Length: 405
Image (cartoon, rainbow, N blue to C red; front, top):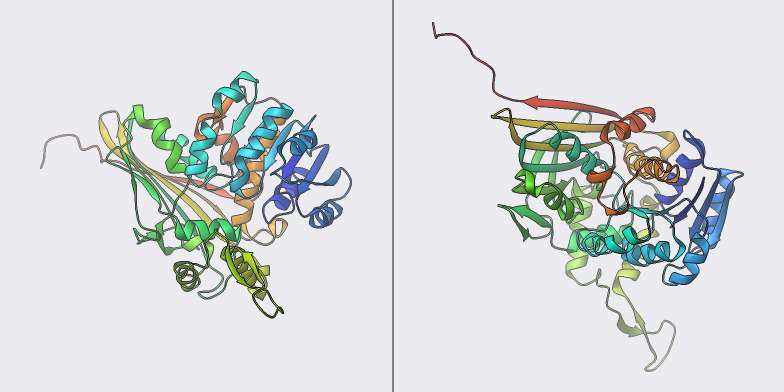
């Protein structure tokens, strides 16, 4: 089994690699491919024999394809901005593909490659981490138990490490997008845009996460679940999260900086450092903000509280009666995944499904969201093997028979 991980030196990529090496059915060869070759080498050395590093610039599709030739599967853990380039490289190399999601709009663009993957006899799975990924599979598990489904609601809950700490568990650039881009919800059968960080409510997660404030966020689940379950009656779908795993105050501060324009992607001209006169250079405000944040001490540590709960609710009908189903997958601190159950719940679904694809155990060909091709109980078992637990709640009317007293 040969697995190439694009962005393999990143926060999540290196943990996917660790599970592929140390988990059940270890991969024979894992390639840590990253634009930061020195970081890739460091990750590879830490994982031992069978793991090697390679330089990879996803903007060079042909060179990426040459790296991918002969692989059994490509795991794309790079910044989602490059998902289309990674998929094009897989098409050129003839290699199956999976990624960690595309923040709704990118996922929709990726779905358009279905015919190309199908014609090449290749499988691509879009968004198979925790959210999206596990959350989509939870939805599939619940919908399979209903005759009709009207609402799907997804809640991503965690305990922040501190109200003011800038310690994130995944790409800070993606978090800045989630703070600034308008979330899309499926409402009364139509896609509707909302304001960033709107839709606040308190939600009761499983202990020890407990009551947490959540809000809307742009996410890939809403891009695909209404398409998958439209014929089954779905009229509402949204995704809410607890401030991206940060403290609320930290997110409010980031939102303020973004509102000032410091999260903008378009370059601006600024005076060149140490230069006299009119000399100027072009920089992207977002790059400057991200670099400043990375240099803060707290940025080097993902949330050490460790606990994560992904909860999905389905409201619908079964046997002519209304029923509400809920499933939670909860994980606590895990030393193998840098102390966090949250990072484990992102890395393990990607690593496990990569194994299934490499072994030829998923028969579909084309581009699919997880709810259409990933078997729920099998994924729940894989997570349980690493210490996560999954619980189901059923709420339905009580059967009352006989005459009243």
